Length: 31
Image 1 (cartoon, rainbow, N blue to C red):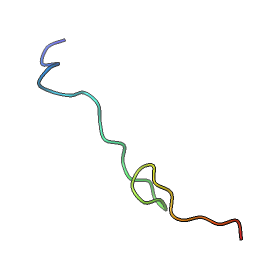
Image 2: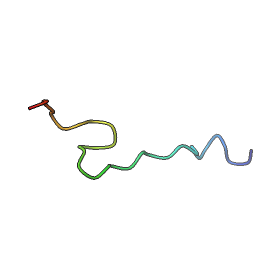
Image 3: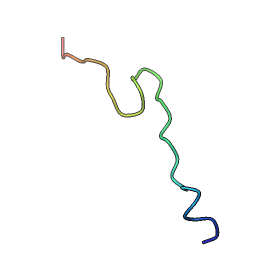
Image 4: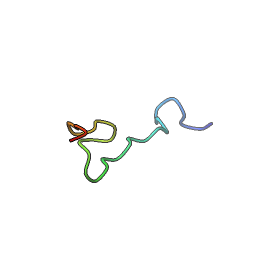
């Protein structure tokens, strides 16, 4: 685990198409 402390291996979840940011859904209503 070389450089584990300095470099965080986790990556940012990329923005999905049609959504605002990665997780945040746009406001949605059934009709």
